[in-house]
Image (cartoon, rainbow, N blue to C red; front, side):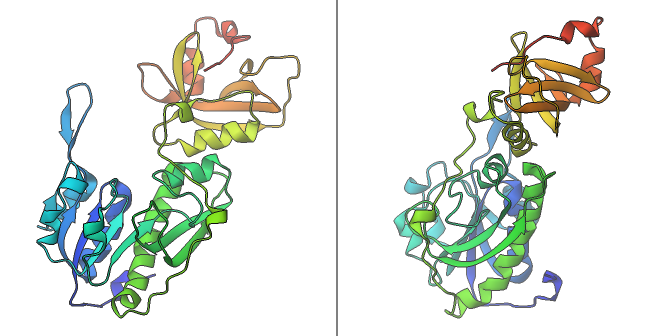
Length: 322
């Protein structure tokens, strides 16, 4: 969709609610074509060892466009300031807090959410990660009417894309944020003129993609090679999959599968040192780590990690575990 050709200007007062980089194109699309009165995003957060306060990407975009920004700590207790902007439409995209009933019922045109999955599949806060981790062949964007339950409102429209076998959470994220922008702009006129459909979600088909936990990041070498491959891709570029070698954490950022089998080795055992990586035995085959990050160090090619050992043969027989 060429949004440059979209010249719709409605008398609508939009409050946009979103936080991460994913939501930036969606907000930019609204700014380009509609009246965004205010932006609501999560509070700044400390990052790094020095605790420097980091602004959400959405705040940076709003500031650039001289749009008022609100950053409530607890939306359920601090929603009144949003009402003061008299929004006729609230649009959310990866905001990070549940909207209270007072906000859901206020706008004339309702509250609309841009969600990065084909609902009712993968409700929750990490649908992009889980689409790859769970081995889905396709995913997409759902535009939906919001209700008090998480991602359970009536759907307005969906657009889908295939998940390529080389996709990571990062590449899929980049595709979906543009798809989300374009689909929202496509359906907004129908929302504003009252013709947008309300398609009930099939609860029997519902699955969940909850926020990633530390346990989700562990690699399990007793699983299949496809399982391990999908988990590495699904956690790249954040937060990363990991295993332990000699008690130290090794993050794995990139890998590939082979057809080799090693029935006499234990799961997680190093099988072979390849010119481009480290072979590791899994339940039904072998995975080769090509980009890793040793504890306390930067990402590096696996071959550079190997070359860091004076005696490379000492790696043979070592076992990755979690």
